[in-house]
Image 1 (tube, one colour):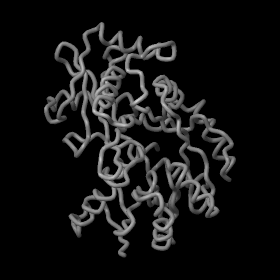
Image 2 (cartoon, rainbow, N blue to C red):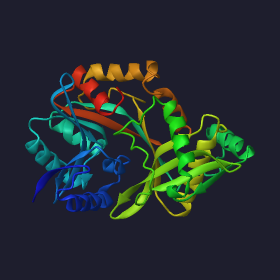
Image 3 (cartoon, rainbow, N blue to C red):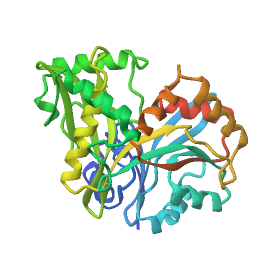
Image 4 (cartoon, helix red, strand yellow):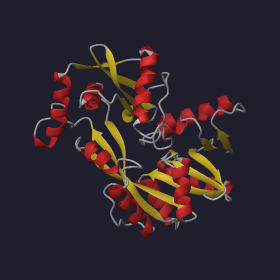
Length: 344
């Protein structure tokens, strides 16, 4: 058994490290954050017998005076190996503060049992494709029907293909228009940044109106035992003057395609700080209060309520996700997490 650290973009043993990441991702990358562990700027703790943890590193004189690792999502490993991989990581990184961000029930229960505080972070939305009504019948889908029909009436069409088939100037203009309205830069970590070239198993759908590019949606694969079982709707780009409902038309077209292919699920990703409850894990009450306050009163940081409202209209399953840290989070370390994610 060998444990090692690797930095995205380094050359030493790059081929071996990349092969290990790909192997474990394709076997155990079931979570909606799994494919995001391949984004640029991450570092890795890799155990060649168990799997890996991917994290954003931060050094900051005030927010991370030693070193802070922001681990993204669950371990990319078999659930039965989570605890062994955690033990080996902690042994190797005894000097580094670590925040485990957007982890699911299996890993959260291990962290709590080990005495680490665990707080609810929000919910991830999963749509069961086998049972989803793609015709959008009934009052619960009234918003989606209205948005879809409006876009269709205005002549919006959806195409799937290679991202390289798009006019790069038009794509860059679309992305710049979107980012200008979202703070001017890409967030990293919880959202995998848009890559302007095709990537393995990633799907690209876009919308046009009279030949003009209006919107792009990127769907990252989710794996089990070497097979793609579903997708995460990871990236959206839409022009400010696109007809209302354009992006929903893309997502609904993707749902129909994935249904016909026999995929299991579509994840809409995280709604941060949504549906927070006191929970059954021992967490930090001040964090629960902070997250609830941000959900209601901090749209200038992120449109928390709008994100929740929109994803809820697809009537998927809301799955609790959690945050934990070693040692326990203080305010400075919370700000350090925001800094690592480029929220600050």
